[in-house]
Length: 443
Image (cartoon, rainbow, N blue to C red):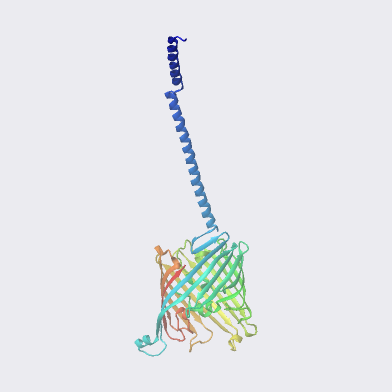
């Protein structure tokens, strides 16, 4: 039998041993602090890793945005507004657009010998509104930025019927060389080649309509181009083989002329080609000087031929825009049914001055001289025009895209025929005055 004292001693010893063991496994305060520091370091490392990941993510997003913007600028996919609306994807671009010109016209003709001015004004004044131009177009490039296209349709101001104006494609096959084909303006005189959206007055001159682009108009053919208005090319040259003057919207068997050839050369002595696209000094950064000339020969074979030539010069500063031109035309006597050939010619000078970024004043004079009398005993027709442009937007920022034009034209010898596109009723050798007010919007 075990001694009771021994059992008591063993129990006490076991209790002391358990307490010592428990004291031995319980961490000291230093160990607890060390464990806490390890946990804090782990949390800090994880936070640093998360911050690094976030920074890398932000950097990746910014780089991707920059890459996409560069791709967009260089022809990448996207859509927006950049001097016109555009839709772009890879090597394709579409730029839809429209031109709206709403015009009010008042025309007074002194076509009788009545001395009663009140009766003259009452009897001989025509006034009203018209949709001078309503055009729609599709422009851009296809397959490559080197292959561009331009398709333009216009509504007739009488009846509203829509017809094709331009349908052309151009391929730049070298830095300075391109080929163009389709239906487009006969490349002879600069005033006609400047878009109707970018004219100085409400419309082009009477001289242009009688001898220049108003007669030559559009035709169908193929051109070879040198320079192509690239920034580093001081020369633009174009040579066109076509169906004859004013042969737009005809098939290959239906021509007044059998064939024709036209050409134009322009030399830029100073400035930016972009400033040459209009007659205004608006937004010019440097002076501009361009001298140009063009010709057209259209042959009707046994029925005769027509020669047209033009010479012009354009000079601009940051506020002043000047333009001068001369046009000459020779018509074969066989086309006229007369004994002699007829040679007609004319001159034009015009100037515009920017009073402010929003306001521009302008003046123009042109004269057309026919080889023979056209009306009564008159063969010379003068045109004087003065006017004002107001460009909408803050400090005229809209430019030609949204502008109001008001001008007054005086024809001291009348006009040889009706030119309703200019607001001129003509058919008289007496005074005619035309007042035009126009609002233009280009999308």
